[in-house]
Amino acid sequence: MSFHSTAAQLATLAEGEGERHASISPFMTGGGALVILLLLLWITTRFNRDR
Picture (cartoon, rainbow, N blue to C red):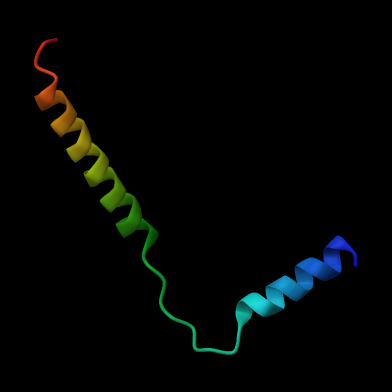
């Protein structure tokens, strides 16, 4: 099997026979990650009072 035929078979398999669902918005995912990281940064700075 060549790489091209393997990739084509995997792409066909990934499409599947089921219904397609709406994906999560990348803006919501990025915004949520940013909020979580900022919250973790704030928590870390609150516990590190010796500096």
